[in-house]
Image (tube, rainbow, N blue to C red; front, side, top):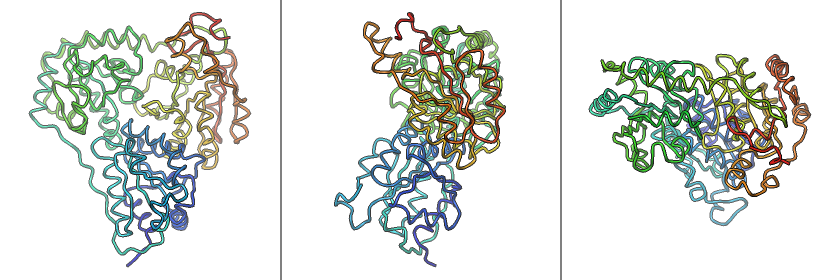
Length: 561
């Protein structure tokens, strides 16, 4: 029996477990959206900007372990969504982007909004598939999902010409490929066990590939904790992946984020073995390619990642294992712990003690606004065991990583590569995927006015995040870099912002709105934010610009006129 391509695409998406698609409607794919609306499945979430739709799909992919899906129109629509593709590509997060294209007869004529997507997206996608033959529509969807989730996960684009949706095809639905998990060779596990047994000061960095494994099997993080305990290993989650290990666990070895505090990184540098377990390794995690040093690490390095192409690409590991990190954990657990593991007790204890001291909720009041530390620490007291925290990019995020000790069951969603604008869209996606749970979005004043309009999407679909806006009236991270690199030069004209009243802005969307301008207002303001359950809450925090991050403050008050 023949069906339209639009119907085949809808059934193919459903076959791959897709129940929700994020989009900004466009005429180039109206043939598909009209079919989806008529069917009532998958659900369409209408967004206010393609970057917001893309970020929502990225967050959905991270929460479910399978590719999130967004649809965008040709030309400008794709261009707006490219920031999310860039983020998903660098973050190794599966995402499938469907693109409405010009009619097939017009390809190559520079038709309205036409672009060559294979060229445009070649550096920020794993694959671009253009569907020309209606009989290949379902196959294209199956290939896209398989590619997005295999090896190093990432985004895949599927280009769909406008005139193809009403075409008929008799080809059946191409069913999903199985999830293929790479297992370590026994010889590699033997060598890893030997290296861990010999090490007196090992350091285990856990990252995004382990997060992907955990999305498919919740037991993985419990097995990691067992491995840490049985083998006496310190576990350090990497940049914007703090939920991978309980911050209160005695084997938590410190957070390996961006610009690790000196006391912690100096202690970590005493390691005699680094195991990157599901961590891709980047300039951020490696402290600008200094630890481990690239390309020749100064410390023996074991690199475990599910894609062999990644191993040895930048660093020369002493042992590279192209395998699922979960399978490596299980392989070590089957072998049993070494008898001499207790020799590492003091090493683990010292690292954890530094972590606990850094996590301590202490701060100094600021003369020009609320120290954001006060607000973040108060929020941490209200976070539920299953809360989802989303974070935009900016120096305000340093307070999250310093003062919130993530526990099992809690989530952090963010653009690991540091793309601005992710905070609000990811909060919307989390609220849709985890209804009835707490969602707290941390945003700066800069990022808020990039994609904060997705608050309208939250209201439309009954999602009620608590939105914390850190307003210091400047692009704080850029101000910090300018000041630290060129302290003799003025920089405020290049970073100063003129902002709206964000509380009034929030109320205009139908949100509850709270303003915190003084430390005396923090406790009551945060408590009120968590008491509201029937609508979003916007908390406008007028914070110090002098306190540039959770760790640094400008040395002279007159630096900020």
